Amino acid sequence: MKRLRGPLPSDTAHAWHPEPLGPVHRDGWDPRDDGRIWDVVVIGSGASGSVAADRLVRQGLDVLMVEEGFRLSPGLGNPELDDMCRTALARDGNGGWTDEGWPWTTSNLGGGTVFYGGASWRYRPFDFDPSELIDAGDLDVRWPYGLAELAPYYDVLERRLGVCGGEEGGGSRGPAHPPTAAAEVLYEAGTELGYDPFPTPLAINRHAHDGRSACARDTLCVSHQCPTGAKGDAVAVFLAPLAGHPGFALRTGLRALRLDQERSDAVTSVTCLDRLTRTAHRIRARSFVVACNAIQTAALLLRSHGGHAPGGVGNHSGLVGRGLTMKLSEYVSGFVEVSAETPLADWRTHSGPFSTIAFLDHYVDPGCPTGVGGMIYESKNDMPERIRHDVLELRVETILADHPNLDNRVRLSRRVDEDGVPAVVIDYTTDPRDLRRLAYMTGKCERLLRQAGATAIQHEESGFAQGSCHLHGTCRAGDDPATSVVDGWGRVHSAPNVYVVDGSFMPYPGGLNPTLTIQAHALRSAKAVAGDLVSRHTAHV
Image (tube, rainbow, N blue to C red; front, side, top):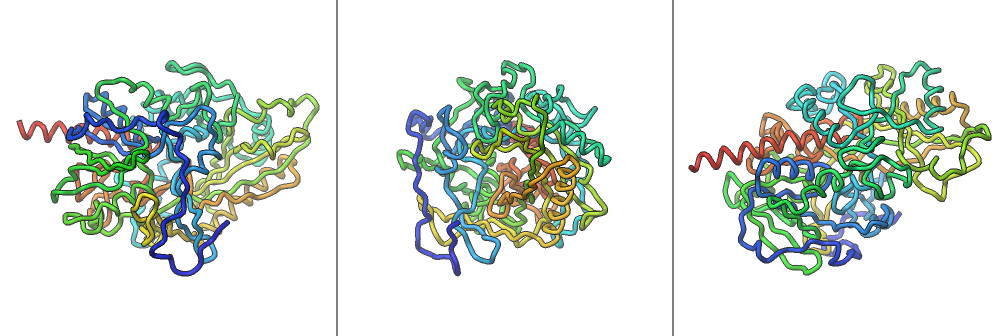
């Protein structure tokens, strides 16, 4: 990995060599929209932006979505896309810097949902108020609302996405996907240890649902686009049905550079750059929904400084970008001998859902340092060149929430990127308490695999500290504007027509894959956006 040592250079453009997919994969700016005032501009087309746009259009509002990335060619895989994405400066774990920090899940229409595994968890009650066990110093880790408030939105999304599996008796979920051969072995080992395993909840159709087909197990979910629409990604579920709707317009290849706060109480426009024509456009709207992810959203708000927002939009408390959390994670794998009847040479054994079994027995665990542990779940190998066909691989991942810390933050570099705006810096150092907790949880993973009879056990780092698929906390939610950026609805305290609906709002990241929770928050926030627009309109009638 290439590293930069010493102070950050001040005048060098951030190295990036884009290879855009071309005009056929972008929607482009329509000059007829110059001067138009939209009801809502949604910035970002991933998990949260797509949900918010869908709800707002259904409410009868006039919605424009802008997305920095492009539409993807059907055969383009995650590794190829990653090579085309802008990186960031980040801590390398040894006190220096690397220019290979990762500030997104993926950058494209639909965001990371196009390549995610569909893991769709409801957060547990503890995640909304962990204050009894989690000490984050000056940062309040309590959410402004609890599980009961979010439950109806979980219900709606589980039905819409076709979520299958999960804990018995919980939520609006369908029957689980059949377990993989590895999951069957892990289930037996887990029950022998006294665990209570259950099927991983997945936004992947087991049976045809809502016009989308059942999973055919043809590809590896976390590195390929779903060829059938069975996976509940943002494009298949929310954006494709909006195509052609008179209340919705989509512009890809359009990067939001800054929000323009021309009044003390409101943002009036967003300045965007067309990445192919290199022309700038100022887009006006009554409300703005920011859904870029916890790193990109913070960077956008920090870039948006001016007379009414000297430190950036929403940065009245100095907290924009601060409190970045990315969750700790690590993979542990081993191999077991199996009977000749197990079809290990069948490619389908190594495709389809990436996870079909999970364990939450150590989620809150007095034996773990601080008393807060994490999750363990099956996480199948998605690298074909490393898949063996003579033995069965057992591969699990542990995920656990990290302690929020004011010093872990997104900030802007003195360097500029290819668009002439300050490059992103991911300034994150892992809390020693969290490293001890991670070691405890990986020990539990090893114990599970050894109980299953696995040999050649190996650990594989996830690189979470340089950037992650799980990004939270840089625009913290709270009731007090002095200690938070947004309120419980995601509304920016100092710019109340701006709403943050991605993982930025989370005061505590929780220990589970956050996508469904972020989407539930976005659906809830969209209700407030629509309500506020109606109230403002009524006030002027």
